[in-house]
Length: 176
Length: 176
Image (cartoon, rainbow over all chains, first blue to last red; front, side):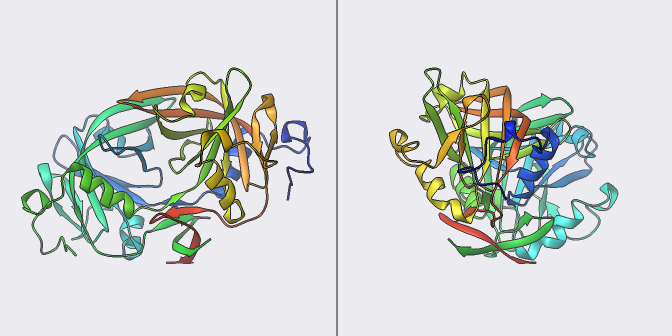
């Protein structure tokens, strides 16, 4: 344990982690809410993935962002899609989170979704969902930041939020 | 409670929330990890804020993103800064989270920080911190997505991650 009150800045520490080690250590200490993003490929096939990068950008207008690798199986569809559905996952949706992080071809095999606005796949039993238009795609190296302007959505099941932390799905715990 | 197995898509629901209502409802259901971003203003004044939008973009190279309003008090400094420090906050850092979300002039009054790499403010007692170079700033309406390439950092106190959910600071709870 390093105490910054007594320890020198880490730049002066011979044991300082390098860039990747610092990044990995920090994100291990970070808890993230779990969302699922879906869209349609140009041929009408449903596509989607589990995301721990969903963030609010603005309320007026309502804008959200998510990040992904451009090597991800969903990128071909996201890169050309007009709209996506962003789902907030709850504790009851752990199976959906795992399914949409699993083999690409299996993600929409089952009755856990149905067509919603614009024919886009809407996942069943989520705590909330939003449909929105992709307004920006920022490529950085082999990744993309995607900005979505929310147009509408729906309320879902009343459930605890789903978190991902220390490689484990969890629910929020005690107030501090 | 709307059950998508039985309810029509919300676009056909006369009680469907509009864009802002959908956005607000969804993000109320989302739990976020809490981070703090700091930098120096051109005159050397420490500047920073509490962020619930921190996300990983890529591990190789190590890239992270955060979002902010360009009306925020820290934007003038962030808009021209070369580098920032991104801190992961833990349960013991609730006071820092509140201080860096409070009045701008008070945020660095106290001994909760010290100069670190490049003279940038490093907050004391955090669970982990990363220093990085701003490589992109994407403006969308009156907001910005900031992309940071991590260069190094330090390990901090072993502590539970700090969450913000339902307007309350929490720690992660039980696995599901």
